[in-house]
Image 1 (cartoon, rainbow, N blue to C red):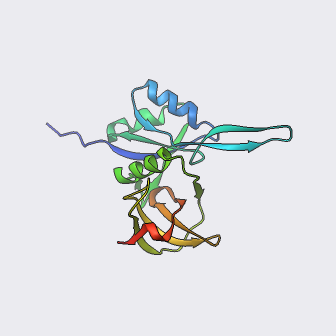
Image 2 (cartoon, helix red, strand yellow; image 1 turned 90 degrees about the vertical axis):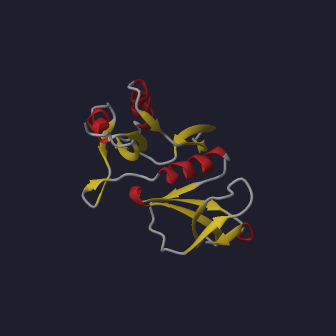
Image 3 (cartoon, one colour; image 1 turned 30 degrees about the vertical axis):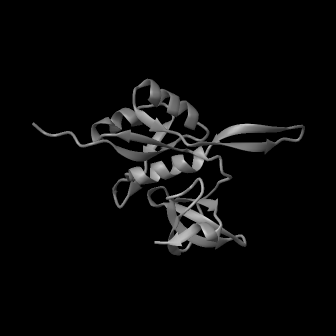
Amino acid sequence: MLKEASPKWYPVYTRSRAEKQAFELLQKKGVESYLPLQKTLKQWSDRKKWVTEPLFQSYLFVRITQQQQTEVLMTKGIVRFLYHAGRIAAMPDQQINEIQLLLSNEIDLEVTAEHIAPGEKVVIKAGPLKGLSGEMVSYKSQKQLVVRLENLGQSILVNASSALVDRL
């Protein structure tokens, strides 16, 4: 008898603005999924309003085995899995944990698809983000920690004082 592989986190691409709907449908199917959300202040011509938006536009994450991939693709709103080197890209549990840590502290985050040149590897040694590792870069004249999500092609920028950061 074949042993079923343990579930892994996979990023999936959704239709534009269909992240929340696809997430709810996956939840109803019993598929473990994660949709990172953040509150942002939106400005319209007549008012300002706080809205909850996905941290990564058109992406959400599912924790599944290979046998569940078809079930995920058959969910309304899901377009495809992300591929890396010809295979479906899996994400390490640590990256999902880091995203959850960043969002749990309600820190002002900025997501960028801009490729940031590799820098020095660092870890935050104090504060609410203690233990978070990434790369230190200089961005918009401020010191910020970058958590790079290789398989997603995105990076998260977080303000971090250099006094709270140690080299790895």
